[in-house]
Image 1 (cartoon, helix red, strand yellow):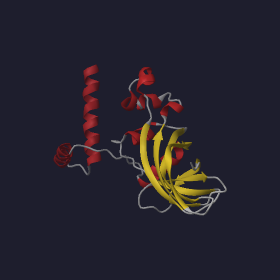
Image 2 (cartoon, rainbow, N blue to C red):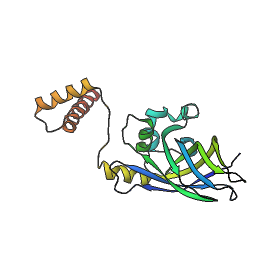
Image 3 (cartoon, rainbow, N blue to C red):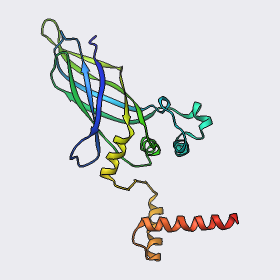
Image 4 (cartoon, rainbow, N blue to C red):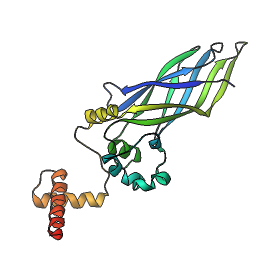
Length: 218
């Protein structure tokens, strides 16, 4: 069976993209005696939170995902982030390919909430690979092989790379999915109060809730 090896060399934003993308620089190595005609590569990218520490403010912000820290031994598991595909052109020995990943700040998605909860450090990733590889055998005949799911590469993505990407595309903004009826009620509240936008409506409601809480504690 053809043995392919994968390594993540670097990651950074895709310049001038219409939507936020991260590009992972992927190194692929094969037997130098085997010419590779092409690879149809599929990758599943997972976040591995157990491979880093979470202290201070991070712990509180992760409550929604994993519960209280004393339960993390049972509740903290890997999170599926995304999947991505790339077609690798012909090479012999080793090559590099750009694996482009569409990113989102939608906080209804667990992976986005994890990124948003962290304040510093890096995010441990595991990339699992599969797909089809087209290569030449010793007689020069074209062969097709299947890449098994046990092909893997790990990478620690600097959190600053993610934060900078989100800030570039969504400055001072986070996406939140709400029930349509709730959005309609919020819009009517905004109109009644003569507010400019839904942000101001939410801020007024939260300020009212804070005042009620403060009075109840007196």
